[in-house]
Image 1 (tube, helix red, strand yellow):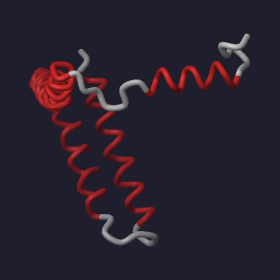
Image 2: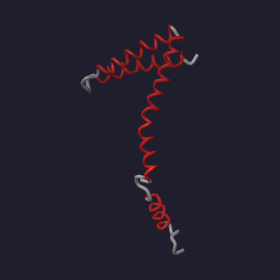
Image 3: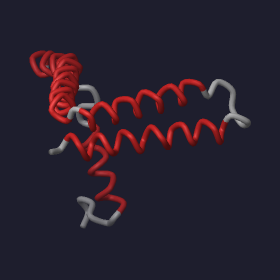
Amino acid sequence: MLALPIGALTLVSGVLDIAVAIRLRNLIEGEWPLLLSGAMAIVSGLLVFTNPAAGALALVTLFSLCLLLSGATLLAPGLRMRAWHRHGRYPGAGTERRVLSERRASKGHGAGR
């Protein structure tokens, strides 16, 4: 059931992309990618409406692929942070204490009080 609202959203998005491309054709050069994107969105929206089960399967597949790629891109920073932790080197280490003490001093919460 979730496929039909997403199909409608895709269809409306495609129509709006084409409308924007037509309105902008006098202002910008190379509006064809926006036209192509709109056409592809309309086709995919219509495909979801004609076969919602296949549309749902496609949505699950795309969502899974997105999560897989997101996880893969988060591995590199995670491994870098792990190496920092193992070697005791943290970028900006100690700066948060200095910033916090400067804030307290500027608000009158310094050690002299």
